Length: 222
Ligand SMILES: [Zn+2]
Image: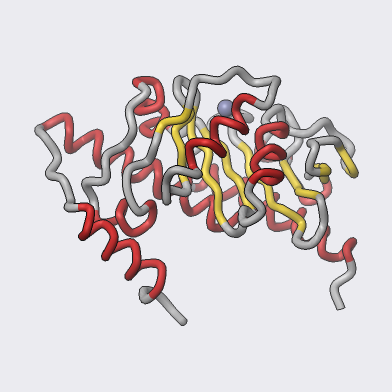
């Protein structure tokens, strides 16, 4: 049987490893960006420490917080985005993992406050429509978390572009949220390039629905 402490040790290791994935996929520079994972069945999540270099992130340096963002266990202060993660976990019980990056192409869309239109079948698959824009919000209050929750409740997308800031993604677990962050940057780059040379062709909403349904219910290994 899994005890809470061995469960938390596994999640610390997983969250540390997923930060290396952000580097591997070129989504972060310096100490920007963070991944968190909910501790299933507990009112807690595991998140990156603030301001620690990606090379120095280890399972032991991860921080365990409660759903108010207060530190339960950890030697460092938690990521400065902890309040936003905590808000999303409180408001969206189905969310098991959250990622935040300033990945270049997606954040260029955020800088213009422009949603990424669903003009690729890969976008229909992963996001089920456009990747929406959330409000401009300053760090340090619940404004970022509230903006994420209120915007994503209206969309199927697991990714949101917070205006003038960057990307937040959610998923049933932290790996799914990292995948959404990787895919968000990929489609942001492709649609940017498409638009630079012309007007991307729309996909009919009924076809977006079919693609999304197939990808989430049929595709892959069962
Ligand atoms: Zn940020």
